[in-house]
Amino acid sequence: MKLEIAFVGAGKMVSAIVNGLLTKNIFQPKEMACVSAPDGTSEKLAEATGIGSAETLEDLLLEGSKRLLLGCKPQQFNTLDTGLSEWTSSCTVLSIMAGITLETLAQTFPKARHLIRSMPNTPGQIGAGVTAYAFAGNADEDAKTDVERILGSLGKVFAVDEPQIDLVTAMSGSGPGYVFEFACALEEAGEKIGLEKDFARTLAIETILGSGRLMARSEEHPETLRNYVSSPKGTTLAALEQFAKGNFRKLVADAVVAARDRSLELSRPDA
Ligand SMILES: NC(=O)c1ccc[n+]([C@@H]2O[C@H](COP(=O)([O-])OP(=O)(O)OC[C@H]3O[C@@H](n4cnc5c(N)ncnc54)[C@H](OP(=O)(O)O)[C@@H]3O)[C@@H](O)[C@H]2O)c1
Image 1 (tube, helix red, strand yellow):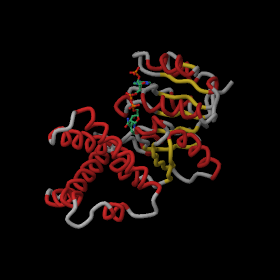
Image 2 (tube, helix red, strand yellow):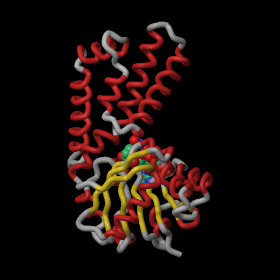
Image 3 (cartoon, helix red, strand yellow):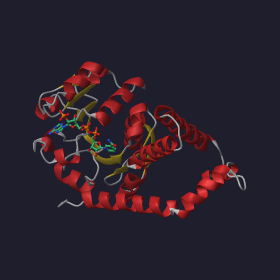
Image 4 (tube, protein in one colour):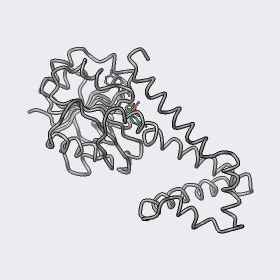
């Protein structure tokens, strides 16, 4: 029986997708299978979820699969079997790999029915992710719905044009790293002013979590929410003045530009 979806890679992101698909009852374990490098991640994922695992890509695709999701690291992509082209004839090929363009995918999978490049992020591991995707060429509504159903297992999904994928990478793809770094800075600052380390970490995490939820629920712009907590001559304003003095917004803008540029660089064939 043809699989509904086969996975190349069985690491963090693929595990998140498999768990999401199972939790949302989109596919049954027997409708999915994966392959990894010989480090044993595919066996681990298969054991934990009940999906199938194969020793080789050829074994994985022997029976056929309606969809193939590429979830190995971009640098591992070039080591994949060239037989992929035949095995993926009339299959939907969906990549979550950073920096692998639709053009490169089209060269590897010339016979695929649909090609999709996407950029998820790590909060997808708890279903709170945000993913942007782009199709190669035109796709009908059914194909779009199908892709959104699969990527929706990680959280929110947005259709974009391919050039925007590098911009999305710099915002939401790398964004969790920025937020984690801010959490570390806040924890360290808390310790510096005399709080116990674990307590400072809890305060930092809960503050980021609560503020994120408030922003998501509120109709107000984040700037308005910021103004609500910045009374004249108050404590927040005193802190925000230091942010402005250190040119915080320029620092964030420079960081996002650096991530965008690196994403563009990785997308070049000679990178
Ligand atoms: N993590 C993120 O923040 C994030 C965000 C957006 C997109 N992505 C993309 O998601 C992809 C996966 O990232 P990850 O964090 O999940 O990586 P990961 O945990 O390191 O998983 C990579 C997986 O690929 C497998 N693999 C390696 N070589 C292979 C080969 N030749 N054939 C088949 N499988 C192979 C690995 O197997 P072994 O473990 O057995 O070696 C492992 O299961 C990457 O392309 C990344 O660009 C990641």
